[in-house]
Image (cartoon, rainbow, N blue to C red; front, side, top):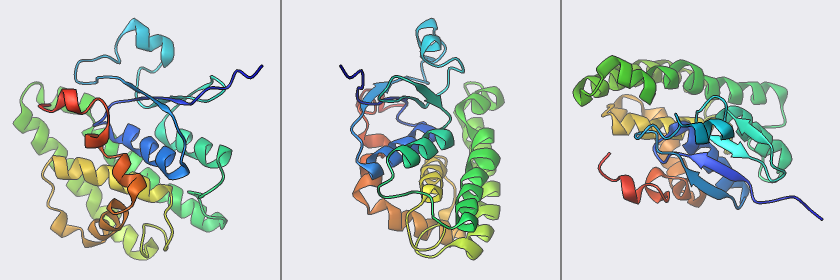
Length: 219
């Protein structure tokens, strides 16, 4: 008797790291169960969620055979290997490295200094301070990303095919727009995001299209 089930994604609609995984799941056409973890209400800092994910972060993916994975890039690479159709990593070793490089510029250089935990420490309950910090941090990060994409991009972040890099870039653009970053300063990033935003898989993964978005509209 099979013990396989649908994958389970623990996600928060505004979490850009969760957003990345949602895009990958949609791109691969994988049906999954969505379980909301309300970061605004600190639902990740509960004993219940600790039993799911020892780091108490989102996203967390429970694979169809019941195994835990966390960290968006690790999850996406697992998805890409386990579900090989519509690959998110190129065949060329050099191009694969480029995709990981662009992804990590976002995940390692930009995202950590503007995530919710940092914003709470920087601004406390002062939303203006939070917004100013996030806007400045993303703007500085996008300056380097824009220059790098000058050399790697075609229609998308690395050449003319959708890759994991586009998933990371587009989710971060969502954060940038939320915090008022002037995207006119970043024409390549904007073009890539515009190209991706027309695709149904990217649309389905948008924060406003998630089940926990409707009950959280004022946050």
